[in-house]
Length: 250
Ligand SMILES: *[C@@H]1O[C@H](CO)[C@@H](O)[C@H](O)[C@H]1NC(C)=O
Ligand SMILES: *[C@@H]1O[C@H](CO)[C@@H](O)[C@H](O)[C@H]1NC(C)=O
Image 1 (cartoon, rainbow, N blue to C red):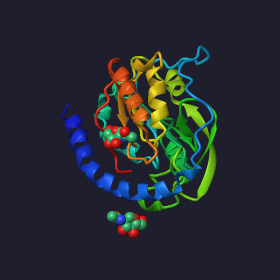
Image 2: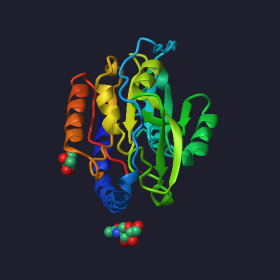
Image 3: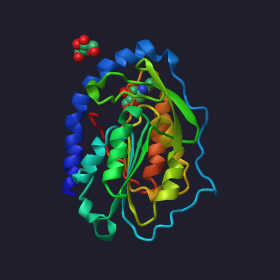
């Protein structure tokens, strides 16, 4: 449990730094928010057509939504989410890295190539609550690791169109009940769609822990979204999923 204290303490230290960085650039967002576009589909919470994994042994599954260049995956490998050696089946693990911003595709594909089948890179793919394509703008400023790339906030001039994946389906098809599943969610606002949909997922208890970064300071957040998020988290917590306070500076 000591690692857990470390994670929590570190997240409080990061918080003050990260908020000051981000609140400045949210000013940029306000002026440019006119072009926001949401993906044109809703919440596909469950489906009988999703196929369960045929994998026969348990392991840790680290699902990183908003993986950027793999920086939080590095943290996972460095025991930042608990000792990797404690993972089931002799410390076995797998990581699924989802990142919408094509800027990171090369880096993520090289992680996939270099880590012998343990990393699956879903690069240039947006984490969402249904499958479609989406157009969003890229933060062209590399200063903060391109962290502001967003599905629903127009922050820069460059636009790209990428497919979305359904997070519920990703989990339904890739994890076993005896896996230890860590879900990191840092998707620049799309969490207000993804989390409520996850709460409607009949097999949500496949997840053990959710590390969620809430972008509540975005200028177009509404009170309703806040309330929906609180309900979604309560529902997930009632199914024995841990959702600790979390903040990253990337
Ligand atoms: C906010 O960002 C602008 C431009 O990126 C910069 O000139 C300014 O100093 C920043 N302000 C603060 C308070 O960091
Ligand atoms: C949403 O909740 C946050 C705190 O979690 C609060 O700071 C923010 O003002 C709320 N936004 C709205 C629009 O109510």
